[in-house]
Length: 508
Image (tube, rainbow, N blue to C red; front, side):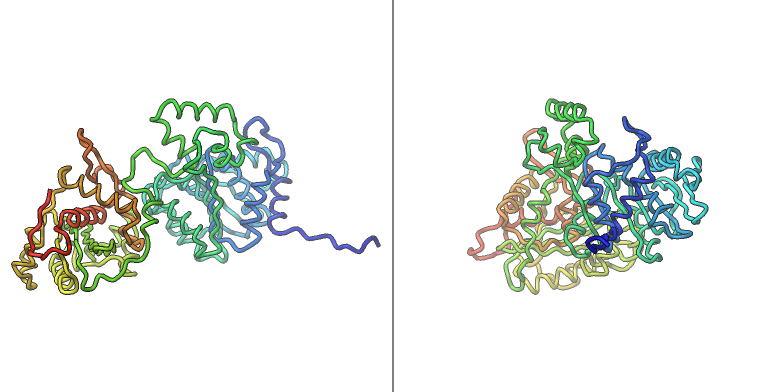
């Protein structure tokens, strides 16, 4: 009878790993056609996905680590393996037709070369589909530049290279994730190098996953530390778990040397090879510095404050930012209420969500109603000791009549001070804002709209080295940061706060 020991049953993840190694083959490379031998890292990822409840699994690392092949193994696992559900729909999503075709092509290669799979899976090359007729399962590759994905009902989705999505929204991603909600225990896999900026969709998903707010969202991120020698093998290994297994080390080291010699290539190298959140443009403030100033602001009731007002034209974002003597930042944002959902989709920004949770105010109609802004400013002046409120003169002519109508006195109107948007006025304001951020003297509470603006904000220099914000090079709205800079400029140029306030201010 032996020792009486009972053999341990394999976990769900172990069973799935065994199936992949038994039925899948290596689709390309020097070992093409050989049975798959999963790496320890791949086994850990499979265990993380299947041995506890998972709704979204995010795997991010440098290029050429076998990410797409791993996606293909998981896809086949759900198409015709132990995870298959009868008559279910499976999809992969990519930003272009070419990218969408890559995952399909790898999965098709595996099927064609696998003696145990090719008799059960039908390959439809033209339609980019795989079908298991016995189970009624169907996989289809989709791309963002193809027809809409609405009306689908996926149980399993692979979002391939989601880091290519610019901005915080993707219509294809949202369509598939919304559609999968009709299924019991749907599973989505995101496999990608990191997005270049903090404001992009993948970055937001990673931050949400790392927060631990939903334990069913899991993240495995391999990235070289920003303070590491970017050209060292240690940095390469940190971002590439298969550096010593799958990658052509000589080629990767050559790319590192190219980036060392040619600074123009460094940003791309850091993003694609080191999997760092880096892009060619230079953001005004890094996410790390912004977060260091993310404490909740104190109340400004009755306190001296300085403000910046960035008035929109017709339908754009309008921003008011107030800053106290102690660095408490209180922003308010407005957009027209009509067409808000459409604008959310157009800008790929969740304005509709922010309007629901109170982070964004809406005005009736399709254009900004300055009456509401004037009434809000009236309340601000009643609650706070507003020392100065900086504004861009362009749209002020539309606001001033409403200010007079809601009861602003001449003395109060004198505190509205014109603030230029060029290098002369903005450069000193940006220096002051930057100094306060680096010294961790601001408290903005990570207000979502202001944080979006901060992530988007970039500067340009004139020949003398002066800086200003530029909307032309920004990836999205920056109005909140413009208003914050104006407020800091007003504060920096004001008289000492212990001096009698007579409403007169001097600006550069």
